[in-house]
Length: 254
Image 1 (cartoon, rainbow, N blue to C red):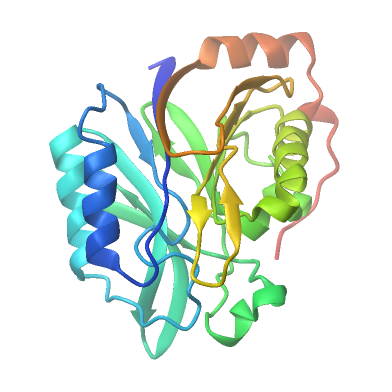
Image 2 (tube, rainbow, N blue to C red):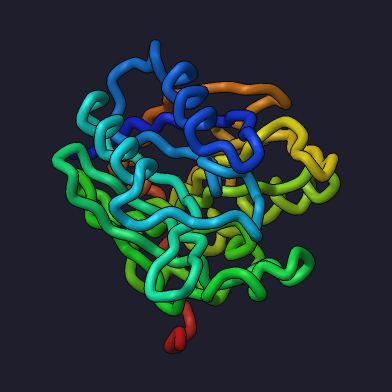
């Protein structure tokens, strides 16, 4: 499959209220056209409450993701707080329509919010083979670390789910473009909107950037659900014209 349809869900999140967040996301997605991949924000079930109790891997939010994926005949990706083996994780779930899933635990924990005091950091990236595309999904603060994001495995699309505040939204906009240019891949960023219980404001700017750093789409500062289509043939032609990736330095990500 050379074309891939992506649905970016830029939503408000309710504080520590998984049931209300799931119902709200269902409402936002009720009129969604056919799509291949639905992308939800970081910690879509609770908002960015680091002290919130997590759910087990067989909990209600995982069951909801499976049900949504089956209903929409699409894969669903987003992160939530998972409790497992006496640890909590900010865990990105890639849920398929058949109920199978893969996951990635956030590697870079946000020190300004003491995220490392509440969550255990992950170690390894996840690369998903999906409909002929190779995709690398990451979480929020990972965006600031280009070595971890480096395209040394020839992925086609990188995506970030986030709770990125308005006071640093200019960084979000610029770093998404930088990651696309340096990795010669499509980049998607899905960020929340609204205000949380700590009066932190979020302005969205969910985006799709092409392999040249061109902004195909950038959301405005309100709830939006946007479906976009990208083409792998365009990516291949762009890399053929400008074969930068072959000259990259070799290194190992520990």
